[in-house]
Amino acid sequence: MNNSYTLYKDKLKGEYFEVFDRIELYGITHNAGTADEFEERMMNFLDDLLSAQKNGKPAAKITGNDIEGFCRMYFEKATIRERLAAVPKSFIFLAWIMLIFGLLEIIITAFETEAVISVWDVQADMAPCIIGGMVGLIIGFIIEILITAARPVIFKAKWLTSGRIYIMVIALFVLGVIAVMIFESDIEAETPAMILVLASGGYIILYYVVKAVINLKKHGSVHKPKDKVSFFKLVDENVINDMPMELKKRYEKINEKNLKKGKSPVTPEEYMEKLRKEAINDRKGNFVVIVIIMTVCLGVIIHEAITAGLINGGIMLLMYIVIEVPILKWCYQDVKGQGYKARILKKCDELGVNVLELADMDEI
Image (cartoon, rainbow, N blue to C red; front, side, top):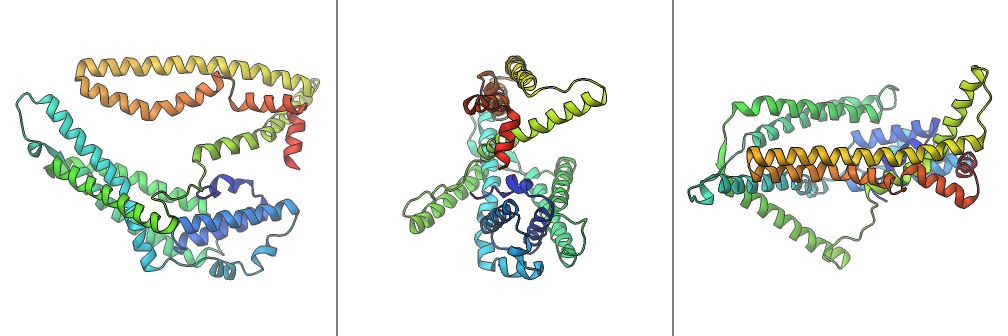
């Protein structure tokens, strides 16, 4: 289950979480293998720590007393060849952006221009790509300097955590986006959109052909065997697993407040009835949210199509499909009675227990 360890990391508590964070931090700052190798190692180590935590064994049983020595043994630095092999994958997203951008320029120009023109006459502004590339290189250089400076204090500075490293990277990324938006208008770098389409399209085709050949040699198929669970499925599983305990904590807090106010505590039966009413209200509320979102989006799309043309209206429609459909899908789950709370209550009914007892069962 690759690329999933971050979703389970919070299940670790106390010393187990601290040990895991130190080792994750070591891996981040020492170029410990390729991205896939790093993810696999971290997931395997997480499994070991979760097992130790469940059985009450100290983390030192896995790492020994010398955590730094364990890290040097557990991780392997990526070779130059491995790091170079990972470079093409890092550019594939940019290639898709350039291809879509170039095609949109050609399509929009074709519809907006009354005279017949050659596709080679359609110009695309490359300034955002050029500035973005330069800013990206600068940010990458800054991150490398900061990470190199962090290596000597990984096992000494308690305040230095993997979470803070990630926050630093995100902050620098946001600053980079702002810098691109500020400076791209000051540079003119027009090039034929067709060159953009051919260059990015050629790169995409070459990348996937080479990838297919490698997969064919390694796995006997052009497609790599799927051993990954989707991100959204993992989030869904995590929420379902954690919700009974969260609902139990909520029940305890309600009764704590009631006792402070001199009120009678809420019984488990009363709490279950409260949750059932909330699940019904969630269904009604999400139906209203779906209607509002669809009405607003449809209004904006129609307005854009009338005032700016059908092409811009179509682009707006595509943008809303990408952004809003996942939100609508999530809301529709509740409308169908398949929301998180409804599924927990259904599980309680199937097992003949209340949510407090379900939480205790999951803890075992």
